[in-house]
Length: 183
Image 1 (cartoon, rainbow, N blue to C red):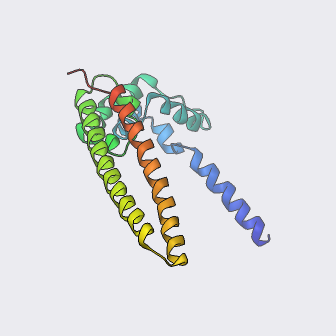
Image 2 (cartoon, rainbow, N blue to C red; image 1 turned 135 degrees about the vertical axis):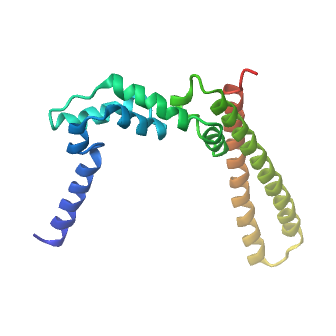
Image 3 (cartoon, rainbow, N blue to C red; image 1 turned 180 degrees about the horizontal axis):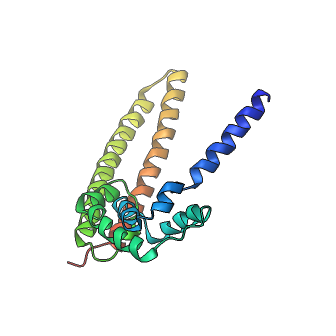
């Protein structure tokens, strides 16, 4: 076996091993409530069970959907917290769909996280505009061609950054409107 074949086989094996969500032992032991609890604790949605069914079908084991879902709901109680909601909002992510019903603390945390992100982005935008003003003034005063070119390049990059910040602020504003809590 040559070097390329070895790495090709290794890549295929790693892909195949990454597909199974459960081992044979986990499928056979069938502690579906515990497996669901673990998945809920990580915020996985109810469709995640399909991956387990696929993994366990290889071993002719059927998943107990009711026990799994009962455990997943209990696990979601640990995941769908105000802190996790805040973290998702603060990064500009969409809320976890598993937490969309019956977790008002998560919703409030998510909204507060969006507000924090919005404030941070507004601050970054203000700083970028200030930097743009300073560079524009430098551009007017500089006489050296190389320095003018460098400043122009910096201004172009800063313009792109400002545009990206505006886009991100628009996204957060849309999320704020869409997920405003019913207080």
